[in-house]
Length: 243
Image (tube, rainbow, N blue to C red; front, side):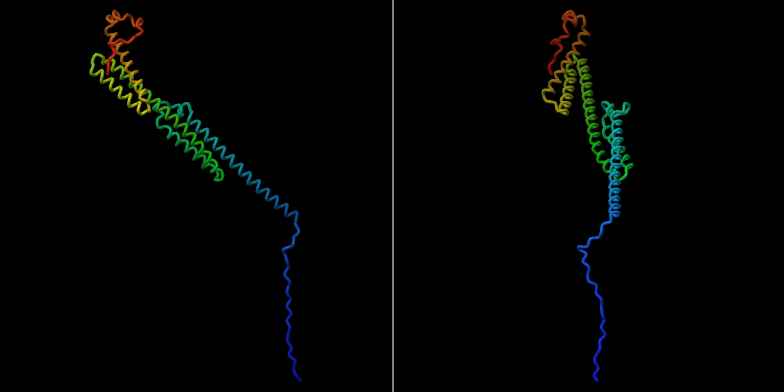
């Protein structure tokens, strides 16, 4: 009798794929509330941090402003109270003091507030150096002008005293003219300004020579011209020379 082959069948259960594209998970109000609260808390903390950084930066800027004001206006050693040659070269020195204070304040701030402060400090530094520079230049000009006028006054007295010694008298005037030309050129004077200053100097010399001559020859001068109060100290041809 023929044998019929038998096969063992293995059954395999396959799970059909679940489509999740349209699957909606029910929302949990409690979870949503917690998430929203967490987000709100994070935003509030970040906002508070920003405000704190701004406050710290502004406080540091205020301190720097007070330092700048003291450096400029302190009654004892403020830059604006330094006059003439005492102010020369001080602009850079006081700017270095300003920079040192700015660096000190910056190092006291947290990193998050430091950059904002440094930006404000840079603007304050520009204002500080500009004011310091203007003051120093003004005092330099005043000092040079004072020295120049003092030199001319001394030169006029010297030239007046040499009246009668023609060679030295002319030389003294020529030296003064050279000083006028050099000063005028250095300060951008026009030729007319230089010439006017020379004329002013010549008149001052003539006035001094007249006063000295009249003092040495008082009796003869009064007999010829009257009292000085009568003549109004007018110049006479004898006291004017060409050079």
